[in-house]
Image 1 (cartoon, helix red, strand yellow):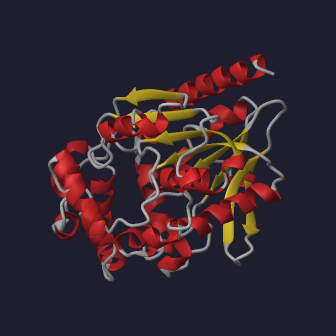
Image 2: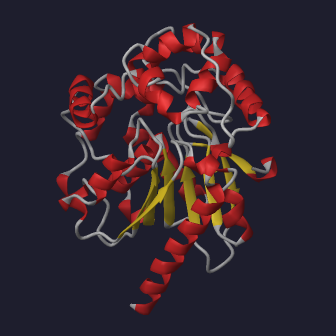
Length: 337
């Protein structure tokens, strides 16, 4: 991700965003890339060049709390309606009427809310690892935990509670090598015991758990993570979890009307499932897109033998598959003009 292509913009709520931008070469569309936790726009380093070289426009922000973007520590600043407005203001300043949205991890949640609030700004949506996230205006986090445990057989989101604790930033900073070892695991199945259950992540960090780096993460990549979060800390990034474990996220979703609860049926959808993801298992995404809510949608599903970080391990293949999907519906749309 060439630093010369980064720009800075301050939104109407006085939040500064840093974002990678490259304009499209007509008639190519522009792609909006939204990353998750704990990352920056650099997470798209194996996919963005593929599209940039082919003339596609690129917008890839450091999401709120990360990289060169502001890092408020009040969780209320991270509610989806505000994040959505921020992103649309970036599109506005770049004079982009409509884009194709691509999201991974919490970026997939952000993309889902953009589909709820600003569907007119998108021609298509792609979710990677995490599928479309439905609005949950009345669901308490403890209820979510119970439902998920009944469905998959283990406590899958227990680590959200640790990220919501006051000392999480301090514990992570003091055990950074262990944090990297568990977040980007050599053996992805260890998430079932070392990450997901309530209390497991904190225990793992305090034990200074270590494993070799996975093949897709170089020592340079690791040092970039260390440098980024030594400077910025984790107090801001963990706010993405705090709005979920509190009632902030649910309360924010109350303003989404039933007629905007799902993406428009006219928008093509893509889901990239990570077969070795143990906190966002592919079965959940497949069930979502095969539900009645999506029976009228045009959904393309691809599966990858990868863990949660498929955008790092399978970047070139995902780039190829996304472009084939884009060319497919672009051709179809032209045929109907």
